[in-house]
Amino acid sequence: MRRYLWQQAGGRRHVYDTTEYRVREGVAFTALCGDVVTPYGGRGDLAAGPWFDREYPVPTGALAKAPGGLFGSSPTSLDDATAP
Image (tube, rainbow, N blue to C red; front, side, top):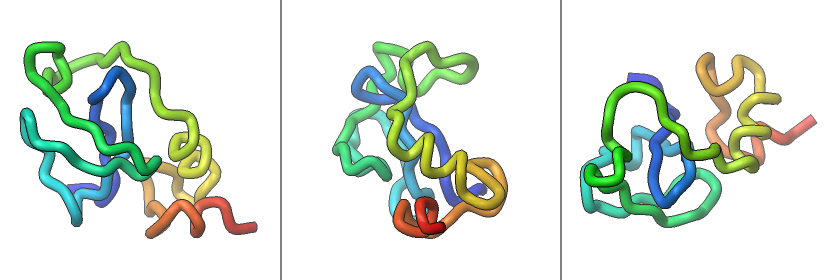
């Protein structure tokens, strides 16, 4: 499993650290942006396929600029992602 994954919750798509959380319906987790969100199956948060909620811009931008980006070798923190 990749270290950082996307999860839809709270009306946005969030990035979370898989070493800290195992996403489950009705169980809150802290996303990399710092928001504490809870995914719910009834609103489609746990459905496979396309998600239509917007991503949270802070970790998206930081991780996109990091070496390897979100889907490669990701930084261990947002500080690492935004370092020159």
